[in-house]
Image (cartoon, rainbow, N blue to C red):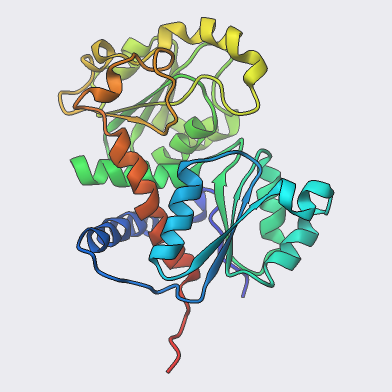
Length: 306
């Protein structure tokens, strides 16, 4: 039987995704009560990082430890991947020694090729196309604060990047309406827009996008690998900064999210993360709990030894 992977929100049914969110909330409650729960004892997660990280590394490493397992950090500088070993060969070798592999990379094709040759689950910790683990945390955070997101309106303000692509997938899987406000030429990938169909609308005015929205989300204007575009992007995106005044146009019970790290004074005003409508710190913590639910689902043994 082939391994089950998590490369995209589309890899699971809406029911399975909702179940993961509920399980994340349950595991969070166990942790808060100090209950020891170690279903992954003896299991090992390999974590391959081509891109730097704070939340992804901490959440996966701490999550495996809290579930009784272990995690091994691997950068491309420390492995043969960095010296040109084919991805398929690395997948065959690593999956013979590990129980799951998390990859944070640039090209999404690295993930799909690795998964195609892996005997164990492969998890997308971020690619240039998608960031599905972050969306699990975002959806768990909304569920905790406001209940089901089905039928609600979400506004994405800024670059049509990997986070925006994952929000488009989330619109399909969690059945909400997504408005995307971005400068011309910075729209999300057309394939993901087509997938979302009439659930998604691209517009140029952030004020129109947030009008009546129940969730407003954004990300940095310059992603890793785009640093040479910084000056141009700062000028083009300036009208798309999320401020308290912009949030005032949203629904009275709006939540504001940011996947972090945040560049205060750029995509957000200096004070917006201190606004009571902002839940970025809960959102960041929920990376841990949502991913623990995912790890339990993918890695927990099918049987327990006598």
